Length: 151
DNA sequence: GCCAACGTTGGC
DNA sequence: GCCAACGTTGGC
Image (cartoon, rainbow, N blue to C red; front, top):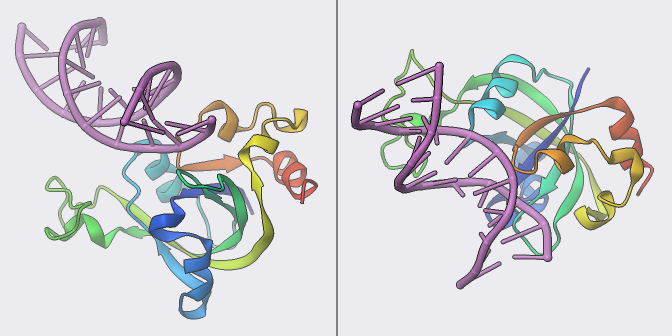
């Protein structure tokens, strides 16, 4: 079992939307970054635990935990010409982008702010703080625990 | 809205 | 394969 951090913009789809989704389960899609894609496609497995991170919003930070319930499959949005994330270079049978399904496990009573994460020495070399723009990133067991300890 | 950091594209 | 130009992310 591995740990991850997935970013999302709550104005588009946040942890509250996940909580309201049928079976509190949703497709994690529209990832259009190769490094993130490679993680999704090759390394994210059913049962992996995921921090849900809210970006580009009022309360930037880690909002809760989800669990991967379906491993990588082709992201349908890439094939839909009406979709903003349509990719003309992709074709069914030759998908370029992948998605997974996640189920909510826990919504933190308070978002753990990025501002606070930055002050924790135990997180100094966490990918989130080092490579700010990666939308799917692995989290070490030590970093996972250090974040949990900040709740 | 600004802008730094980083990712992608495409000519050569 | 290099790298300039351009596009995007995301905190502030």
